Image (cartoon, rainbow, N blue to C red; front, side, top):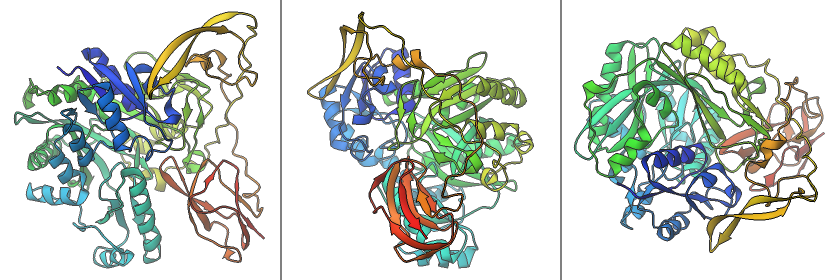
Length: 598
């Protein structure tokens, strides 16, 4: 069995892998950026190593830094989680070149399926039809217009080496083609390290149904069941469930068989997901994610299988000890993603910040996979997934009501989250009746009444001056992280902020009262002021106006990247641009003025 696993990731997936390893008696190694020194995955691992840097490129996408931590830790396996290097064949080869096991598919399979273009070709060879599209990267926006002339608008531009909706742009007219092409390339490069994009026909009202597969090194490939992930915003999932509602069993069996054929076509090993679009009684191959999925817990709850444990066992050479007929799916599971985004007005604005309170729900059939606790900070440099709330029940309606109960028990303060939108989705008759699609949240769900979530102020700490208490502190020696216990004065730092002498979860003792939702208040810009401000911390990636330009209300003046998402910052009134106060590449904070219009 594997002895020590380095988890080359962060957040809730790193925590998930650490927990699975601990249950199997396997030691764990965490890696962390400068911003994640006190992160939950670091606190939970047996040992941890600093990568340096703040951004993903400087840390979790720094191959040499991760390989250095691998050498120094003596780990005999690397689990990549999802995102970052999870579908990077070059990274997998770099790991195995050191004689270390990569917990995932062979690099050759990753190259075939990690490239969405070659995966389309592989699926076609396996007899599985895909969505009509181009099977080569595009190099010019003119190709978008040419493709639309043949297939019609809208058209989807997608990252060739990505997934999860990152780097995907829907183009509805020729006028949008150039900007959408550039934006898709920027997002693809920022999140996956590769800018290549390709084209597909954009289906108008599909459901996103994906099939979980598991394959060992001995030729066994099984499908475990499907997940419906149709409730999405920005082409990224909000709610997933298994089994898919209103989905005929004959289609389920056909889709499972197709997923197995696609997996065999690329020599797949380990856990993977074959994704399909389902519309008008037919399904089309979309892509294969050659990694563990965010939504894997719903499959675990309906099958009783631990997918992370099986990933580790397969990577260690074990054969699956069950056959296709042994896979039994019971009941219904629903997963809700809790993201640091404010869904007020349906805008889903990124909401980085420090979590001041986080009380988890409990009760029968409730599971919470979190990557943060009270006192932790959600950074604008990384993905904004805070936690996944998953429930199981005997049937879909009971599971839906159980999820609503669990969400009502969840208390998370200090940042805005997607919970109000999740509740609105779960309560809507279209979701109850399985009449939703991948476009439903943005095109038909009315979130205009959702209020802005306003953070509450933390209560002052109790007076403990003059006492000595044991404090755990972090020390780094030659880049390796250690936890030490020191006896220090109990008085907090003068600022009242959590300092180095505070224990990791000291903020739990200072939880504020539950914040009360307030109505969204317009900023001066929304009220017609000529001052254009940014609503969150991030980086300006592109300026769209210059001094002297005429603009109209609602026209974008710049593009802000926050939490790996691009956000258009728009003017709130007509006029002339008097000043532009930022430059491309510049970091800004919430409320900073980017332009003045007169």
